[in-house]
Length: 371
Ligand SMILES: [Zn+2]
Image (cartoon, rainbow, N blue to C red; front, side, top):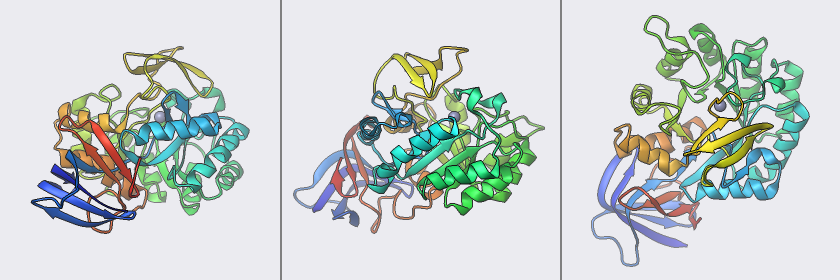
């Protein structure tokens, strides 16, 4: 199928082209032009490259932890309708047998392209910074257990978040990278040196920078300062205005300088409204779009969708739209090792989000097909 999309603003990490258009043939962008669009063009106010979400637990009332194909499909479809064309499905800490069953249920969705990969957030994380993870399921990364879980993924594990200060964690980082997955530092009590050691061992992502880790202080950079300053690391930023205040989103995206990645860290309530939900075995209450554990009130993921994260980065955090696009598309695509997406340029996969002037999604093209 050949198709032209035209807009008043065509924006990606390379900047903004006024009155421009993008021609798609099959699943690929074959031409980008400016000026009068060819006849028959589909029109929008803004075109952005498809969004790439490194960290997402569910949406549309459905959860990736459910091991239920209908729920997995619904969660992915919900995010796709809001512009996400490439995503990890994130699993929270669980007992190994449960986790492996959840992994197996997700594998077909990686194979059919619905998901880019599976993100294991735990169970090798710090009990002191476990957020909305069930503390009873946390483990040290014993090499045999790490191998068993990675093997269960059969190459479809895309990312593993772990705390580098745990015994065996650096060996686990090397095993994760050898298995073709991203090792990510998060839910950690690490000091700056421990965070740096993880990066030296091969870790390349900071899981929701600032959240669930010791803070940045002016005489103690801690994991936040070390990960933000290290050019090898992509820093996840939850841009919902709740996990981080907008000035901190602005600070992180500026300081990361092209390595900041907007993530949703969405739970099942994203796109589904307030109410009572669960994350793994824990009860979660969502009020005014904010998800908290019923016990203790810890933040329990977000209800964010990627188009909303982009709007908030622009409106609340004062980022330019090309900077927001870098964080929503190019930086996370690079972190995943995907050179074929993240930009609106010739040769890129035809992942295009068409938005109105208020940056609300009108239509989503994914791999050259309307989602
Ligand atoms: Zn988390």
